Amino acid sequence: MNTEKIFKDILMMLSDVYQNEGSKNGSLTAEALSLAGNQTFNLKENEDDELSKLFNSFISNDDHLLALQLKEISNFLPWHHSDMGGRIEGDLKKQFIQFVLLGPSGIINSNDYEVGIFMQMANIDYPVRRHPAEETFFIISGKGYFNKDSNPEIYGEVGDYVHNPSMINHSNRTEEHHMIWSWRWSGDISEDSYIKNK
Ligand SMILES: [Fe+2]
Image (tube, rainbow, N blue to C red; front, side):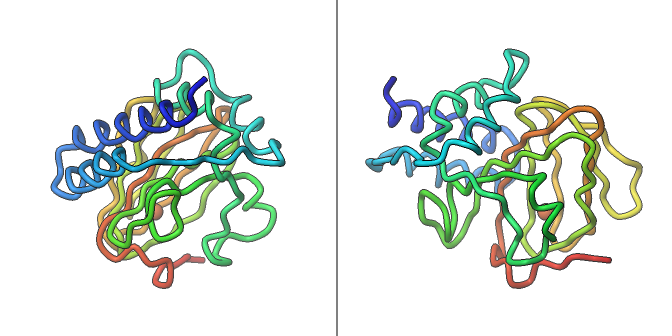
């Protein structure tokens, strides 16, 4: 297995995903991912494989090829429980794992765009939040439900895009299935202005 080759394939697949989104920020993000493919990466294997094993346990052949490729190199990716700078509380935080691929804290540095992979366990409500960055999710495994402001709830499954404009209130929830998506952020990507609504 060539970890770097698979990692670069993942970058190209994500670049295609956001190119196909059909928006200016999607195309710019796609370009940043594609350019990053020219770099050399020395991904280090994690000492603790707990989170990569957890991720891998949810991947099946029904999933997007991206999910299958991520599984191949999962133990070389910096998975963690995100709390969004303290904005996601203790017990809930354990229901999410993620890593940042591109961004200020990403494997690939960028101050303009953020791209990462996020997994939400089954039967979890990820409460309402809003942020200046505009955001697009692309679902690669499982299924779930999305809310934006007072619009009717949207069902999402593998291959679907969900776009959240800047500062829109949004939330999502899972039922009996987990859900894994890639996200991209453009615009003001700082977490400082991320707002959690009670
Ligand atoms: Fe968001």
